[in-house]
Image 1 (cartoon, rainbow, N blue to C red):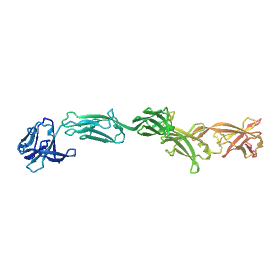
Image 2: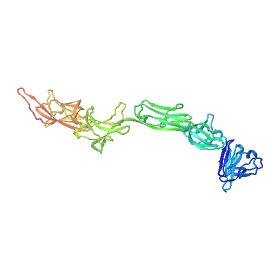
Image 3: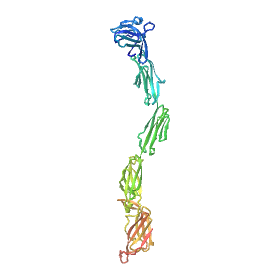
Image 4: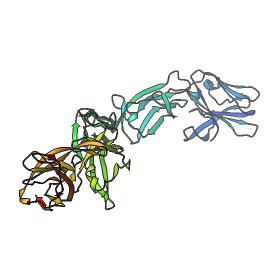
Length: 534
C-alpha cells in the first residue's frame, strides 16, 4: 500500500484528518470486543515491511458511526464541507491506520497515526570499558551504532572530530572505512535525533588503530664533506610500540635499540669510506618498515699522474692527470714544470681541460735534458682537503733518456796551469751513470796515453732550461796530462758516454813557454796521438 501519511501525536493532542474530496466513509483502527465490522488493509511501512491493519467504519457522510463505543465516538467529529475527521484528546488507543473513501473515485487517503516515543538504548558495538574501538591499519573497520527506535523514526549521525561523515537510520547506522595511522586516537560520536527531541542521544568513542612502524630519517645533508661531524638519526612511530629499531650499513647492523624511539649514528668526522647505503629498520607485532638513504661523502681528489707516448711517436708524449674524488667533476689548471730541486721552469696548458691531458712535444736530442724534471698538475673539485687546501696536486718525474750533455759553463779554451802537469776540465750532466770517457788530440800525437790521470767529482751545476735558471746534478771530469810539454796550443776532443749514447766537446789547450832572455807565446804543432780513460 502506497502513499500513507504518517502522523505522530502525543497523548491529549487534537488532530484533523483531511480527505481530498467529500468523504463517504472514514475508517479507523478496529477496537477489540466491540462487535464492529472489520476490514483488512495491507500496506508497506517506512521500513519496507508488509503490514496488515484491521479497520472499521468510523463515519458515514457527516455522521459518526453508532457502532463505536462512547469513549471513542465522543472524541470524533465530522467537520467542513468535505467531512474531514477531527479527533480530540488522543490516546494510545487511537494509534492505527485511517482511510478516507470519497465520492471523487480517486484512491483513498490513508493516514497512520502513531504516538510519539523517544529512541532508547543507544549503543556502539565492539567498544571496551574505556569507550575505545580497536582496529588495524589497512583492514576495514565497521563502526556500528544501534538504538531502539522511537516514533517518528530517528536519524542517526556519525561524526569524526565533530564533522558529519555519515547519516542514516532508523535503529542502525554503520560507517565502514579503511583506517590508517592518522585515524589513531580519532574521536567518533554517534548521535540520535528526532524532530521533537530537544537534545540528541549521543555516545562518543576513541579509535585505537594499530599500525606497523612509520619511519622518518633525519640527516642534515646526505652530501657532506669528509672530516666533518655528522649525525644520522631515525625515528619510529608505531602502535603498539616497536620491539626493535636499528641502523644497517649495506647488510651489516651498526646500531640498534629496543627501548628508544629515536636512534642516531654519530660520526666525529666522516670519511670517504663511510659512503654507502644506510637502512633504518623498525618492527612491531603488526609489521615492519624500513627507509633507505644513500650517503655520499665528498672529498678532495686524490691525484696521480701518468706519463706515456702518443701514437707511438717517441718525440711526442702525453702526461695525464688522473683525479679520484667526490664529486667527480673536476677543474684542471695549467701544469707546472719544476726541476729536480723544485725550481720553477715553466707553466704548460692542458690540451684537454676535462681530462687533464698534456701533450708535450719534447726538445731535440741536444736539448732533451731541458724536459727532465717534475710535471705537476693542479686540480680541484671544490672540496678542500683535511688541511683546507682547495687545490690538489699530483706530480711525476720525467727523466730524459739521452746521451750526456756538456754544461754551459764549459770553456772551449783552457790555459796551462802552473801545475806540473797540464789539465783539461769539463762539466757534464747525465741521466744515467757515466760509463766511459776518453780524450784525443786533434792534429798531433800525444806522447803516451799511460801518462793520463782522470779525476771525477759530483757537483751541482746551474743551467738555463726554457729561460729559467735551474740546478742539476753534474760531474766534473778532470784529465791530467802528465809529461805533456808543448809550446803554443793544441786541440783535444773529449768524449763522455752513458747507456744512451755519447757526446763530444772540443777543448783548445794553450801553453806558455818561458825563455830566459825572452818571454813569448809560441804554438808548436806536434804529431797526433789518442788518449783514452775510463
